[in-house]
Length: 554
Image 1 (cartoon, rainbow, N blue to C red):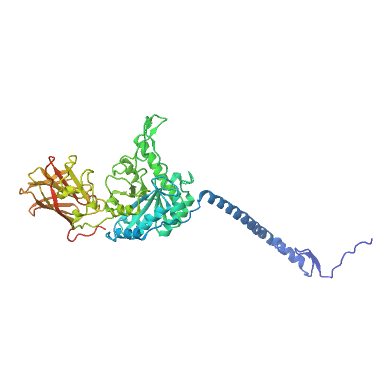
Image 2 (image 1 turned 180 degrees about the vertical axis):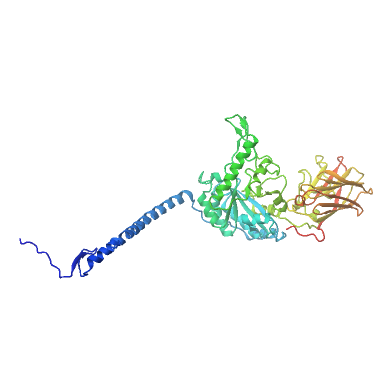
């Protein structure tokens, strides 16, 4: 075989590889310029020379992003399945037209603007037998009733704005939910969206993501917060279970009790108790803020309606002092003093709520809420509003004040009643006048009280021949009266001054040294006899009206 001849190129034509295989190149100065180009790091052709590494990096990055994205989608799908409960279909209650009319009428006599009333719900679930759990349809009916009666719902910020001295809102409620149960996401969220309402959940932050599916997860909480329908506040991090208090095994709420240290055979001392509680409370704040939500300013007391919570509602208790270091307002479902949301409760930092249970009908809820809506001090015939008088002894009928002597020999010899005790919390700058008869021969007595349930309630006690003024049960003034069986007494209530006139002649007065925001409150009537069978005094008339020129405390 003949040897293969080598191809000869024309003069001035060189064969070079520009990245696409050998090809002719007629550049006479190629050697010089190519060398110069190479010295500058330039190549010739796509993906070679100076372009090859950026292209390779870009292609690698694109490939990696596809892999990462696919992996992230897979991880997100896994986490969503694990930490996001599917929401149930929207439940709607069947509500009759008569119920809607009845609910609307309950709101017709209430003021358009008033301090909000706080409600407590616990859980919404479909198949629970717990007395604290509402079915989805029952929850829908409750919210429908609030709408029909003219109530709006507030966010946590709107509520705290009012409590911090802001203007009185339109008639409204703050819907609160204790514990942070998963039913709020699964069932309640869509019902809240339907009614365009807001809710505030007091979470046990240490239980979130745990004990599934009973409690919410942080993913659900974050989704709920982003919806704008839900706010989240503190219900402790891990103090929502009873703990041992002594060697015999007695248990109590860890929020307000020193716990038993089993290994050391003793109870916590005060310093240990304070450190433990503050650590838990601060941890709950950190948990909520750490998930992108505002740091909580409100706290709901665990077991506030149950046993094991001694002095939980006392402003002087050790637990309350610790709570006030971290929170502006504390919520409870049980309190010895009915401090519903008001200027006085804001000053005290304690708010009593209305608890809604499985057995609570929408009508009952509206009645309970309506009793706590703050009303102005203006009542012309309150003696005929028997449904608005509370605080009575269980064996005493209101008729005892109207001259109808009790027939039972077991009836106490003393009776009292408070007029709208829950809705007169902020009353001041008002006057009340009573005509009291049947005072007999000095063996019976009657009293007209003002500033009910305040830090210094005032009471004027009348007998046939004497008027005595008491401040928080202690005598501060006394004057004789012309002896007769009937007297007219007028009490004027100012910010810190109480003035009494009897029969337009005798005057008694007292000026309190306490802050005025601790002195507000409504009217109380009292009656008593010294011996069984004696004539009970009779309240023949009663009137309540604002003082002339009195400014609203809203």
